[in-house]
Image (cartoon, rainbow, N blue to C red; front, side, top):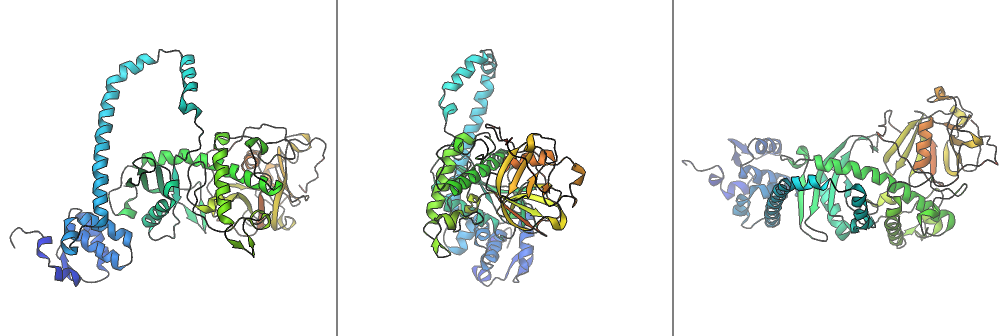
Length: 494
């Protein structure tokens, strides 16, 4: 055979019978899949190995991984299948376009380096002039409504995360932002931990807004069976998006509860931020005013889509079915919602509070994600299990921030039970209250800002894993109205 390659000496008959040689090993058993995976890692230029691995994946029903392998196989795939792989041509065009973009970037860097002296000289311009020009620029008056980043969270139980992520992004169509990333979050006992470890899987960059051409970058070696690209930029983008998303959830939850309480949509953010007792939101957060029109429009869009379905014999758009105190709108919609272009329809649901009496934990959850978690003090059997809602929010109950109820209080369903602060921090994690839920000062103040008036509260036994990840940064809203109630003496079951 002389110097002929392995690929040139394996006949099509051998391939079709799945009996052939790779690296001196005969391939004819299902367990050879593991060998092939190791083989292409060690010999990434062996196209026959990629082709055979793709065949194994195709037989296993893993079409996404099979297509990736067939693209790597290149002309070997074409030789045996007598046609070019349909994705290969598109990938080639994207690769050429990527090359052109890289040349532009290199040229831009050279120009910037050459202009550094001029840029330094520009620093001599008075700061006041710079601010004035910035205020007049179109960018500074942007409405902030266009989503900049989309995030797909791939559940751990999904066996083909790349296919799942790409399918989700493609189905989002024109609603998908120019940059989308797929990630996996740390999960335990059925709960995804918003503040746990994050693993980036891939990122998809559109060539331009509305274009069908996309630049796909892989960021996880185990998922793509490849050498992953640099994911540092993706992680930086995700960190910025994450804080904006928390603000979105609070805003969207406030809009939801305003509609439930008043039977109409709010016309402006100010309708959510009113003095006590109409203080649905505790204040205004960064970017909240700018994103309000976009979030409101998307909530209306999801609501309109839900009206086409039926829930318990009623239209899911009705107040009782969609916006009851303890019931949320049902019915799936792929409409992305959020200040940053989210894809999961489930993310349109409002935030909820869940208290686990067995572990003395209170958590703010969104679907199956734990957004915030705190250690709390309870009253043992005196703390009632069941479903409640926040019927009142008050700052400095009884006119003080260091009394027995601390600086914040949230009444549960117009009862004598409440979530509040305490002047006895040593009782946190214990059963020493008369039934209420005690929290540390910093924790109750953050919770007060995160959840709106009307938030559902569920108290039950055995809900969360023993260890939940705390947030590195506190959520804060800027107070705008008077939320105290000096005419009432609170007598919660502390």
